[in-house]
Length: 309
Image (cartoon, rainbow, N blue to C red; front, side, top):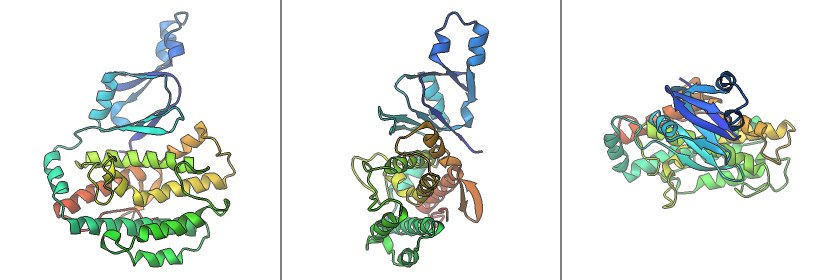
């Protein structure tokens, strides 16, 4: 079942009733002149079990504790945005799998050689997907295809960085001297927003698979609560890049993050990707990736399942 991504960008009351998320607008709820029947008809309800990601993007949104509890019990990721309306926080359930302790043990005791091999596979697929994005735009990527075979265990030669340097210099020929920088010029803010959505989807899937999003196979920043999510999302980043390229090519004004732009980026969880020879929504593919990662930790598999562009 494909879970829904919900975006709330206006003042709202969000509560729980009969296993449903209830959306009410303050101006309707507080207007005593309106009949109760109109107020009830103005409500919108969504089954909790249908929700995968919730984005809260307004300082005047009120969320009840009962709703938060229900969302987390159903393995939903809740994203909060800052005053600039960019993702700043992520809430995930503490327990998302019935055999979580056993799965934690497999993850925490994974050998260093295994983790290096998993990172090698991750970097190889990331570079392959980046090359596919360039080729889809008519940009040569033979060098990147060659670099895939040069990625060693643990990426000791740092081929990921080498590929990234070429990739970002070539991806946006419309912008002379474009640099990928979180604080950089547009369309960097579109990339930031898209990556935050995918990161939440990956972190949610890791929890559902019974894994610790904090304990990475490569990333290990002590201040990063989602190191493993940042590892696993690497081959998925090019899907964000491609969508942003499409937005830029469409001629849309992307200098400011509008509701329309956010809507396009919030479609990422349902973008169709190729994984294991089949087409699947990105959110479903991520679940296959994290499930395969656990099997690598437990010794059932030797390779992570990633999508191919």
